[in-house]
Amino acid sequence: MASALETLQGLLQTLGELKELPLNRESLESLIYWRDVKKSGIVFGAGLITLVAISSFSVISVFAYLSLLALFGTVAFRIYKSVTQAVQKTSDGHPFKEYLELDLTLSQEKVQNIAGVAVAHINGFTAELRRLFLVEDLIDSIKFGVILWVFTYIGAWFNGMTLVILAFVSLFTLPKVYENNKQSIDTYLDLVRSKLTEITDKIRVAIPIGNKKPVAAAESDKDK
Image (cartoon, rainbow, N blue to C red; front, side, top):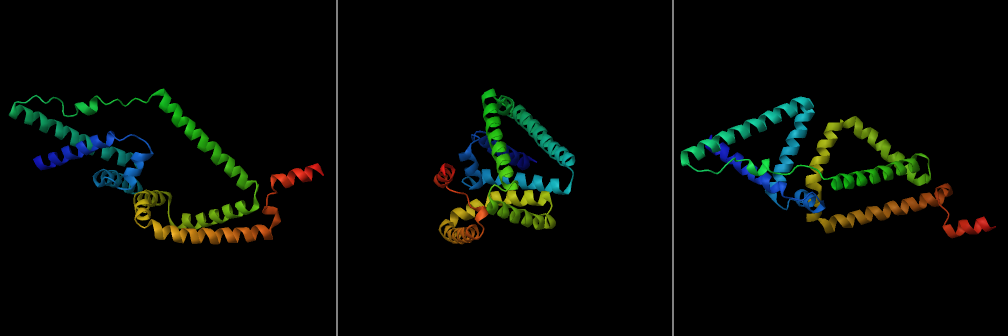
């Protein structure tokens, strides 16, 4: 029992270190690139277990069981620390005092920044979909159609939750694999990119409707 509570205490200390990480790009990169194996392992393990549980059970059940597990752990740890303090006659105070005093409120400025970024991405996404569906550029719309066709097969092979789990696992594995093999991967990517560009240029030449006139040419035609 004591060893389990000590393990819980170590986990809480690690979570305390996690809360000190600023929510920015650098902290996210440190997690997905496994700069600190312990922190990344906790986030990856907890996230993967939660996603697998949600894929097997209802969201309400997963939330209830995880909450009960967390509540049991905190209550047991609270009782253990109280008994320890009584036996050792110490006055360390509440074991979760640090977390109880943690400010969880969101500032208005931060909410506005998040909303501004979200609106900008939504507007860009909407404009891009309009451009593709209304065939502003024929080649881009054809490539978009090929991607949608591939998605029909992916949807037939996997359900939505499986894709979420695969995306989560890829988030914590592919960046590290790329970092360790950057040179060789970049070589192959450049080769593929050059071939795709070559094929796209040939298609644009064969289908003039997919080409956009340069601005200078368009102005000269207008003057005529």
